[in-house]
Structures are given as C-alpha cells and as structure tokens.
Image 1: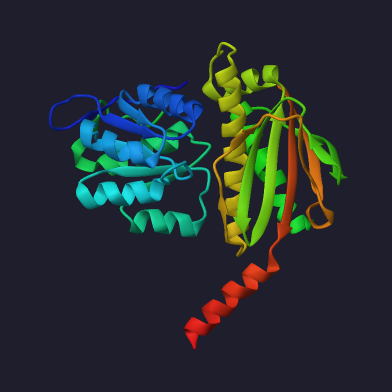
Image 2: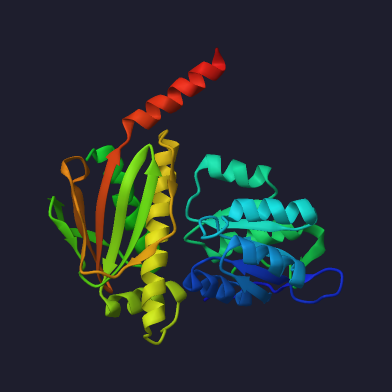
Length: 146
Length: 169
C-alpha cells in the first residue's frame, strides 16, 4: 500500500487519532491499514452507532470515520447525536450508499464530509487533510502517494 | 424484473470487483430462475425495502473469498472463517450500496438493510413478480455469484408522489 506524508496534529505534533466505526471488521481493518499509511493512530473502533457515541466520549478522537448502514443505530443518527453534544467533532461518513439525499442528510446532521466506498486511499487522505484544516499538518508539503 | 432495476447491480458489481481486485471481470453466465435459491459457497443476503423490494445475494466459495480479501487489503491474508464471512458481507455491502446509489439518483427511494449471512442450503423461492436473476462474474481470483430478486413497488411510489403533490397544493 502506498505511503503518504504523515499527518500530525498541529498543536502537539502527535499523530492524528481516529475512531473507526463500521459493522464490518473487514472494512475496519482496511481503514486501519490506510490510517497507518497516513501516519495516524487508531484510537478505537466501534461496530454500531450506539457504541460509537460512548467510544467518542471516552476517547475524544480527532477524526471519526463513520459507516452509515449499521445495526442498532445507523451512522447518520450517531453522527447527529455526537455533534449535538460535541460540536467540535470531526465526522467523515464512509459508506457505499452515496446518493445525494444521503450525503445531504449526513452533512445537515453534522458530518463534515462524505467518502464513498470502495475507499480510495488518496481520496480519504485529501478529505482528512481538508477536515483537519489548520489543526493538522502533513510532515512535508508532498502530494498524496509521495 | 425490469432491466432498469438490474443494470445498476451489474454495473456496480463490475466496478467494485474491477477496482478492488485490480483486474478485469466478465459475466460468464446469466440466467433467470424461479426455483428456490441454492447456496454455492458462503453467501451474504441483503434485503431492500421501499419503492423497490426484494433481496440480493452474493455468493462465493471460501478460497475465492480469501483471495478477494487479500486483493482488497493489498497483502496476503491467512484463511479464517471470520475473514471469509466478513469479506462476503462487505463485498455485498459495496456492490449493493453502489447500485442503490445509482437507483436512488433515478428517483427510487428505499432502505438497504445490513447484510446477513445466508447459512441454509436453500433460500426463499422466487415468485412470478420477483423472478431471480443469477449472474456469475469471472474474475482473476475466482467466480463471484450474484442472485437478485427485486420487484418494483409501484403503489409506494404513487403514494409518495401523491403525498408530495398534496404538500405542494
């Protein structure tokens, strides 16, 4: 898998911490491998929306990667609940169901961005850079894949 | 079953497999069946409800599932029952999610339910209005079977259109 310029938190130079939420272990592992190539750290994982909320409170990650179709509580509802309590939360929806209605609903309810599965690492990297904004810095001013 | 409903699934399976496996795919076999579904390997079943109702099954043998998982992950993965199950379910998610995206953009509204493993040998028998389309995709790592049985729920779409019209008055 290709490597990317490591992305760090601007405030302390530490790796960006992620909470990965997906009911598929396979999908979580794939995302975790991508996060590694971004120089990030998986702070925690969750398999449904309810667990995502409790894990967010416990871990306070820099970024949440959130699936939509999940048992118990779907991703958009979980994102909304997290953002209501923590407006600073940066949530990126990652789903194979990427129709406009779904994207708009996710963004209206607090998600910062949307990435359609199957996830291309270079796309996710750029989205994370965008969502982190000034709170994140790439080690070099390199483009993805360098 | 209308081609309008089927084509997005063919396109999505082709795109997801070709992108994930990094190799071309082709449809080796395509048939319509009214017989009960018969599982070939490890199968994941996803129900959709709404303007379109029915189920889609993705089915592959365990060895193919491990090779698919390894290709998607970018490195060789050891075979395990969990990996096989997860791969089949996630593949179903990806194909159906992408197909649903395309159908929704055409104006169909529905809900996709999380995948469940289809463990019994046989599945529900298709009916006259939900005849199943069975496809075999040949890939560089083995065959992937797709079994689609959907029907257009015209009443629901009319009800929704009427509700919208009522709101606009």
